[in-house]
Each structure stands twice: as structure tokens, then as C-alpha cells.
Image: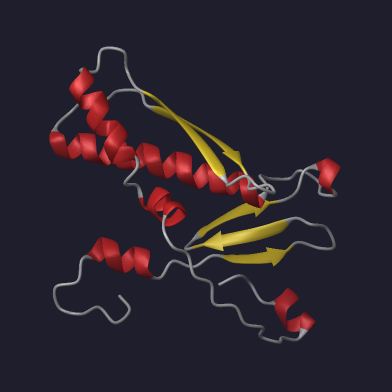
Length: 159
């Protein structure tokens, strides 16, 4: 691991330096995104000038929140020895518009036989997923431009 110090939590280490690389595919809006050893297509819908070959970037934000919420609840339930069974999380994302903040609506679908106290606890835990906390907290950006030769970029594989 990169620069791991004595007593560092492995989960924190993994979250501390995540990286995604997006590379344009041809002359369209479609990009291939690489995260670790995984690749996925990201594109815009047809009505936005894309070819609809994958979710758009804002849809991926909703995907991240829904999946992180579900996994966080399931990990918590497993640690507690609770058998959750089937779990679903729906996220509806409304980007900020003039005078209105960004809005996320989450619906947690849990088994109807789950005890009420467990359902209430999972609602609290859902808000503690790392993506939820990132969206709810202060965000900072560091941006820079690096120049590259176009031929080199097109010929080299994604990291």
C-alpha cells in the first residue's frame, strides 16, 4: 500500500486515494472510465448529443449513492448478525437549479418482517455511507492541466 503508516486502518487507506480515469472513445461523447481493474462506459443520452452507450455522469452520482447506501446497510447488518434478505435502495437525483439546492431522494426497501428497531437503525446507518457523507460535507477541488501528445494518449492503454 502507498505510504501506509503503523496503525493505519486499511479501509481508510483505500478510501483516501481513489482514482478514476476517463478517456474519450473516438469522436463521440462516450468515454471509457477505469477504476482499479474495472472499466465502464459513460455517455450522454441521444437527446444530449451522445449515443446512449452507458449512464451519464450525473446518473453515476445516483448509482454511487444507491449502491454505497445498500452496501453500508448490508455490512452493518452482517456485523450485527441480522439476516436482511433482499434490500433495495432507490435514489432520485435532482441537480441544483437557480434558487434550489441539489436534492437526493432515497427510498430504502427492506423486508416487511424486519423488526422496526432494526429498520430505524438502518435508516441512521444509511446516512453514514461514505458517498452520502462526501455529498453532505465540504468538498474541495484541486484542478490542473497537463499537456500530452494526442497520438501518445490514443495509443496508450488506460492505467
